[in-house]
Length: 373
Image (tube, rainbow, N blue to C red; front, side):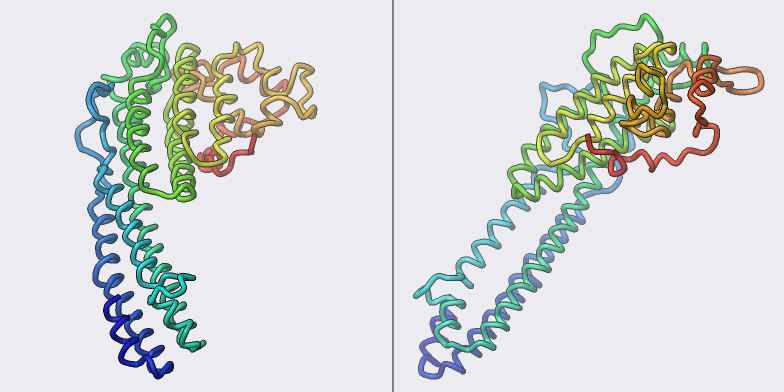
């Protein structure tokens, strides 16, 4: 600002020279503050985030009497993002100062010079400064999203599927030949715990992260970021269910509770989390006795063209693919896995093919491909 004042004094009688010098000073300040300071700083913040999950599996559940795991993104990152944002606003407010008459700042001086070309050049420089700043900021935040996603997988997959977190699966594997993950829980198992250890721990960590993210981002940016995180979280869970897990009746109760808990975290911010509502409906396929599945899929009248049931609401293929992850949908024989009699009878009665008889493209059932509720 001192340079602006000196230039105004030196060239005050010549509007053209004043406008030219002020525009040059503003361009130099944008270059210095951006290229030499803010841009490298933001790049360094992003580069500090590791895309690798810890080598050692998490010991679940986490102790909630100590601060939550940072999921690879320390509070320092979000504090830095917030302070950079504040510094940018202060820089623009004190140097450009749009619509502040008699401020002696760039906008005021150029307006008084009445040099249209200089004002246009300065506006373009200001715009390019913020565009580049936004691009680099988005890259750093996108890297944070990747880091969080990696650590979500670390807890849900590495931790949730370890024997420490999934007791009882060895028994199920011996009986059915299926090593079914955290929801293939044998009948008679306890349901005292409200959630699986992995989901309980993950929700604790995500709620801790949310406080820092909320303080750092604008409401609009927070909504966009948290929506993206919700989608990542959903896709990680669903891909494991459809490709690796089997779900028992008891496990379905735990899965339902886990979906509710994860949905609650997703609803902290963002928009259109209907994929979680859809998943809540699909989980009921694991709780329903085989003789009641037809009514659930197509409605009580049993008409596949009625526009009722999960076939209508969630799609035929998606409903069948989810249903196929029941522990009783297939059983092990000496020739391999064979479809259960009730499953074959149900599909024949409905007159539909089973998409799981071939290769299933799990990506078709991602959050972005879900129907809005």
